[in-house]
Every structure is written in structure tokens, then in C-alpha cells.
Length: 495
Ligand code: MN
Image (cartoon, rainbow, N blue to C red; front, top):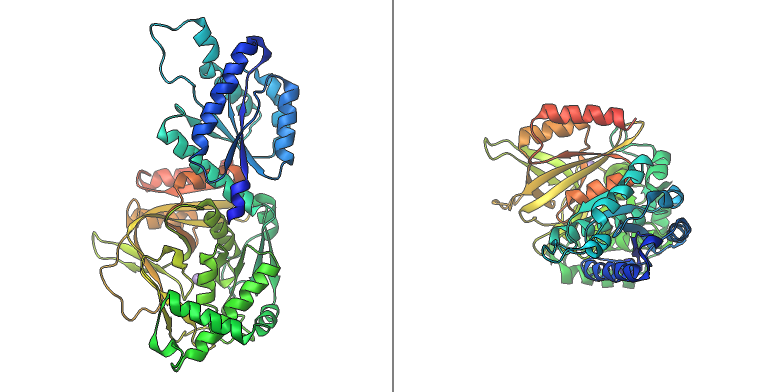
């Protein structure tokens, strides 16, 4: 994922010729100071562009930004007054996400020394209002960040937005592959793949499982041996999976599936995939450890044909580059309804990403009641407590909704010795009853992306860029009637 480091955000400073060269030099100098500070905090490059003083310059720069494949978004700041009729033609063609930074170079008014020179330079209080007007009038979606540029909250908000547009950028022209179709009869994992491509930029296509099987069949025995040794190094292997154990052959089969799947995804340049236990012809076991390890490497994944969650997981993994913690495919599995200690146990049949594990996973083999195949190998682990969120992307038929619930993960107090899958415990915010009711009212899926490191603000910024609704279930959401009204208003607004 190192290739992301070369990507750029362009910093555009608006002004005009009125002020004369001396002031314009100062404007450029100040803007470069700001860029110099802010770029330290970002996972990609922040690039200063020459101060913009005319319609022609603005149009040309935005044309370049659209055309430049490394430029993934622009930040704009009106240090001085930049009449916004100059911006109309440029903004008309803007195709990259925009963040409007409303800051001022001087933090404090110099009470004793302030004169008209100071006033002429520090004009963003009205210059940015002129710019905000034209953006609103032209209905241009954007992020607005307000505050002094040395304030940590400001750089943290820019970081959040950068991560959102990084996820967005990664989805443009991304390819996802589904092995087999959707799980039979299931509704929420379905969706309009054509509309998804128009909305988000990624495409989803299906391959029969036989295409994957023939890739798996080409894997060499020596590669399988090597990967089994990697498993042995990285995980606590259960004794039956060790080299002399009774199930060693199952471990080899799992490794063979991982190698074949990796080759298939690499050759096809896929950024994620789905499987379904209802279509496993030619596979000896449902892919478990292979899926878990591929997620950890950055691939998106959704079980039972769930391509929307696969794409969202991939985007969120991209957004989280360089951050501690992980992101995983997840399912709300079972409830704990103990009064005043309600929580959810999240898990899946097999496929939870080890990026969220807080301990060295154990590699185990257990029977699986469904799928009708041999016992699958999987990684089993617990997940630590702390702040997290669940995100679900659903298709409402005529549009998409991104639903987010902030949760407090709970460090497990029990060992769960008979549960043969990775698991997470969490308390939904604001409380179990309100959160679950809101989730059901919003039509959220049972499949989600569980994230330890993506902020709600980043997902809000992502939804803004995608032009979709984001419904948020969180600590300060108030009662359910507010949430219901919000859904009603969004329904009208996003029609
Ligand atoms: Mn599922």
C-alpha cells in the first residue's frame, strides 16, 4: 500500500491582482507556511500551488487537478479577497473532492499595531465568505474546516478528510470479484451493481467457483509447504494441524486455497472478493484462514456474496493507512441481554480479520455445520476493548445509505472455550435498545465493517463525496423520534 504515498492534495490559495506584488508575495509565503505544517500530519502529500489571481489561472489549475492522476483532491483558502465570479468557470469543471479551509494566518489581532496593511492581508473572514457563497450557490459538495491552522483539531480534521478521499480515490476503477452469486433468499446483501459503479466508481463481476478452483489446482507443493511453515510461525497451531498431526492435510488444503486465491486476485487486479458457502464446487473446504489473511493484507471481503461490504471494507482499510488498529468484516451474531450490561457478540462462521486481534491468533480446525465440505481451518482470537464503530452500506432500491453505529468494545471476561471462531464484544452507543432499534429502523445489514481506527467524521466526509446519506447512531443522538425524523428528512432530501 506504499503506492499511496505519492498521491497529492493540492493547496489552492485565492487572491486577486488588486493588492500588488508585495502583498501577493506575503500571501504565497504564508500559504507555504501553512502547507509545511499541515503536511506533516498526512498520509499523502500536500502540495502548495501558486496563488490564484484570475479566472484564467483558476480554470487552468482546476483543469490540471482533474487531469493529474496523482491529485486526489483540493484544499482551498482565501487568504485575501478573491472575487468568486473568478471561480465559477473553474468550479464548473471540478471533478475532485474539495475541502474549504477557513483559517487566518495570524491567530491573534495585534491590538496595539493593527493597521490597514494588516487588515488588507488577513481577509479570510470575508474572503472565505465570498467563496462559500459561490460554492453554496453552485451546490458544490465540500468539507468545511474552521479554525487557526496551528490548532490540532484543524489538522486532525484535515487528516480525517484526507483519509476519506483516499478511500474514495481507491474505489475509482476498483474491481471486485464475486465467486458465485448471493446467498439464496437473502435480501440485504443484494443490490444494484450498476448503480454502485455510477455512485462509487467500483465494478463488481462474477466468476464461477470453477475458475478459482483451476487457479488453486496449479499451486505447487513446495509453495504449500512454505505457507504451512508461515502459519506455524505466525500462529499457535492446534496439535492436530502440526506437521505430524491428523489434520495436517487440511492445513495444506487451506494453504493451497490461499495461494490460489491470492494468484487469482493478483492476476485480475482485484481489490476484494466475496465467497458463498452455497457454491463451493471443487473446493475441499470453505475458505477460512485464507480469507482472514487476505483481509489483513488489505483486500476487501464480504461473505455470502456481499459485495457492498467487501467494497466498504477495502475503502476503510485504505482510509486507515498508517493508523494503529484494524478493520474487519463483521456480523452481529448473538446478544447478551443482562440488565445494565447489554452487549453484542460479533463474529462470523470463519471470516474475521486478524488486523483487529489483540493476541497471537490460534489456528484451529473444527467442523462447520453448513456448506457440506471438509472441516475448515480458521484463526481464532479475541479483540480488545475500546472505541470502535460498525458501518453498513445498504441499497434502498433508489439510492444507497451508509449507516454507522459508534460502539464501545469490551475486553472479554470469559474464555469461551467452545466457541471456534474469532469474536468481538461491544456495547452499542447510546445504549443497546436505542441503537438496535435505530439500526432496524434504518434497515442496516447484519454484515458490517468493524473499525477500530476510522473516525465517524471520515465516514461522513466519504458519504459527502459520494453524495449519499449517512445515518449516525451515537452517544448524543437523542431519542428515537429524532432519528426517525432524520430518516424521513433524508428520504426527501436524497430523492
Ligand atoms: Mn454472514
